[in-house]
Image 1 (spheres, rainbow over the protein chains, first blue to last red):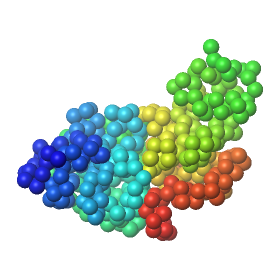
Image 2: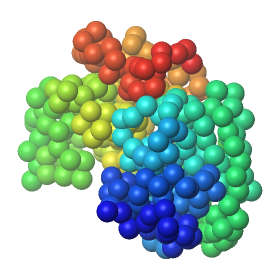
Image 3: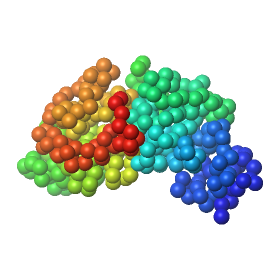
Image 4: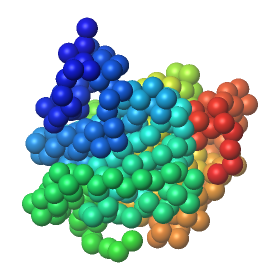
Length: 193
Length: 193
């Protein structure tokens, strides 16, 4: 018996519980009917709430959610763990893909709170994602065209909460932001790629 | 007091112990003098022995080692964990970089037993590696020129043991090889990138 049902209002409190619950335990939290009622903006908000969780842990505020195109169930999600795991490249997208495991990503859509970096964009087309929804092209890396060139459908769906959170983080911790994108070497030796 | 000293012969038995020992525990195994005596072919052999460890676990035989350019100490190493961790993109290079943590990779050299895939090649230049030594361009993806275009020095140093092991694996498990490179989606829907 799930806690969030078709009668539950879809709001940030409900979506935050979804964001925090381990993916494989989601069936104890959300019913199939609640899940079916979620739309693109809701999935993006879950990605942003994962970003917020990371920010509150002292990490980089970037999250991602992977949804099965047919069942509309969440099959993977996660957030950046540069700080939390001392992890030199685990971004929102890599975190969600790692969480999903060895599945057929061509049957899924990935929602990311921030435009993907070069590494994540490459991983997204190499794993055959059918579609990527990008929640922030304001604080952007601009790899949307690379994805489209490789046959991945791209949709822009900015979430103002996520855009504001990332801008705040970048203002507060510019070095952590640079390290997350280009590594410690870029912090020590600023360069233009 | 380390077990492997300047009087120890550098052979596969010694290098296999280095491959298996957790990176942060290496000082209990190898002395600074043993470490200083290692050359490029030895580091590559360690990467190959990591690949062999993965093969013996039922995984993909690809390993990598990261060495500090100044101290010549191993600062990260690992092997592919597609099977072992149900991990959809952890290759030899990503495994070694994850093991190394948040360090300045521009001061290091990465030795990989197999030519890097698109994702790993992108990660290598995005993290500012100064040099990459490639141990197998026979069973290759051919991203050496991409790395060079991005300013990473590339050296080819084929290890016959590693080349033979990878060819054997590809012959035995062609689907696992394809999944490791392009994901489950490529196994289900063969495509040309």
